[in-house]
Amino acid sequence: MNCNDVQQYLAVHAELSWVQEREVQDHLCECVVCNAHWHAISRTRQALRSLPTPAAQPNDHALSAIRLALRQRFGPSRRRLGMVGGVFASLTFIGVLLLMLWFVQPE
Ligand SMILES: [Zn+2]
Image 1 (cartoon, rainbow, N blue to C red):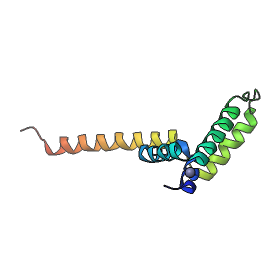
Image 2 (image 1 turned 180 degrees about the horizontal axis):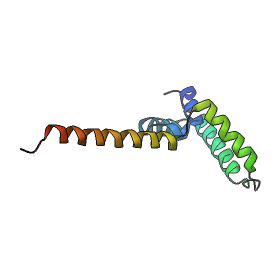
Image 3 (image 1 turned 135 degrees about the vertical axis):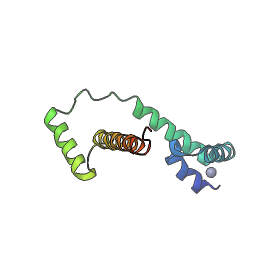
Image 4 (image 1 turned 180 degrees about the vertical axis):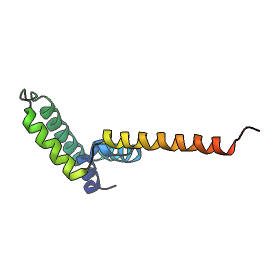
C-alpha cells in the first residue's frame, strides 16, 4: 500500500474493512507524511464535532415537503412496504391452511 492509497483510505476511514484498517495503520507507523496527514484529518474532525448543534428545527411544512419529495422519488415508505408484506404473508398463511383443510378430509 503506497501513500496515495493510504491518503484515499483516510478520507473514508469509517468505511474500511478490518484488513484495510490494519494496512493503513501499518503504513501510518512507517510513513511520516501520511501520519501527519492523518493527524490533520483527526484534528479537523474533532474541531467539527466540537461545533454546537444548530438549535433550529425545520418546521412542519418543510418536513412535509421533504417527505413528499422523498416519496415521489423513492416510492412508498418502508412502513407501507412492511404492511403490504404482512398482508401478503397473512393471505399466504390462510391459503396454506385452506389447502390443508381441503386435502385432509376427516373419514
Ligand atoms: Zn505514506
